[in-house]
Image (cartoon, rainbow, N blue to C red; front, side):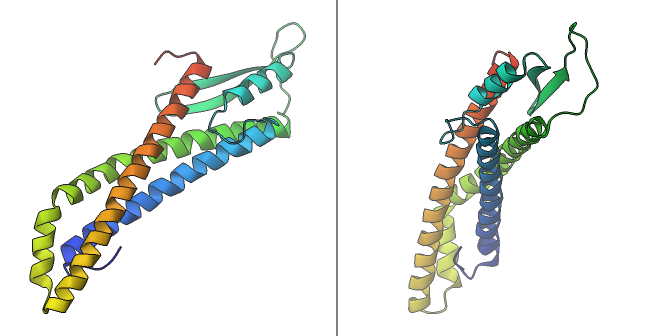
Length: 194
């Protein structure tokens, strides 16, 4: 973000940028966990955020040794694997490494999705305040400039910052929508109606 020489406004824009960066980091971590999960499953569907195919594949491959299901509680979901013996009884054997990795990636998807949504709420409030306060901010920036040349530079900085705010809003809404789709998919896998 560019400086406006108005400490309160500089702080607001910095807060917005930092919150957006955190949300983006969480979203990218979620995408990374989904990609790793699809790689663990040797899934061909690596280019999108769909992981149901992978869970179905694990279920099918493990149907004689594990009961595989997705457990969902609130915004948290996890991959549960219960070992099954020859008579349908559970056995106590350590999970194969690939299944442990799958569980860890699903946990990572859940944690990253939750963090993305959490940051999105705060970010939306900051963005809305900035967008609604544009005219007042322009007046504050005008008052902070000592020369006409500096006023022009600060106005340009304000307009550049506002472009970034609008871009952050679009991306944030996209992240929230995609996380919503991940939650819908998790609920569907878990057998929960949404």
